[in-house]
Image 1 (cartoon, one colour):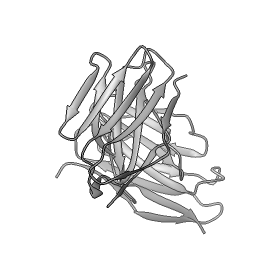
Image 2 (image 1 turned 30 degrees about the vertical axis):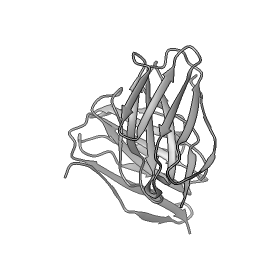
Image 3 (image 1 turned 90 degrees about the horizontal axis):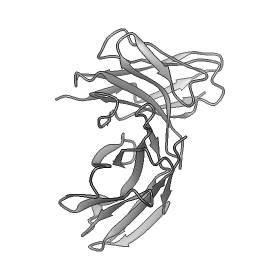
Length: 112
Length: 112
């Protein structure tokens, strides 16, 4: 079945710098890849998603890139701000039943 | 405002007791999901429902039960058969199975 690996588990960056989180997936038939942000004590919030028919999608300071050949996708956050500090999760859609398979999460720390 | 409401926010269970977690949505979504989140791990699917009066087991359904009698509601019962129930439980919904999932703010279950 589908497996999603996420790296790094913790990422610390200086405020204003960029942050990149990477995920790999195993099933080449997966076709939907969302990214979620989770703050302490809250549920995950969808921040951006991409489908397999495009290679890149951008929304203000956030972008996601997808490499179907290598089976990996990445989240890019530019000009990081203190409110970007959170845990970020990637996921891939299991093509057999459309259920999401989740990465283990990345704790992003923005240093002032 | 449209959204997903989970209650209670905190719940304590005694040995041998069944407890029920509530999840209500007013987004008119067909699909609903229950996930379990343990520290440092990704989300694991317990049960999901694509339509009223129908639901399927996820990856870790043992010791849990659900019902879907109304479109808006998808309660989760943690039975006494679940030997390690301490976790953060998240409910989500989506318009259909391959559409973005929206989450509630979770219920934290602990053992007395």
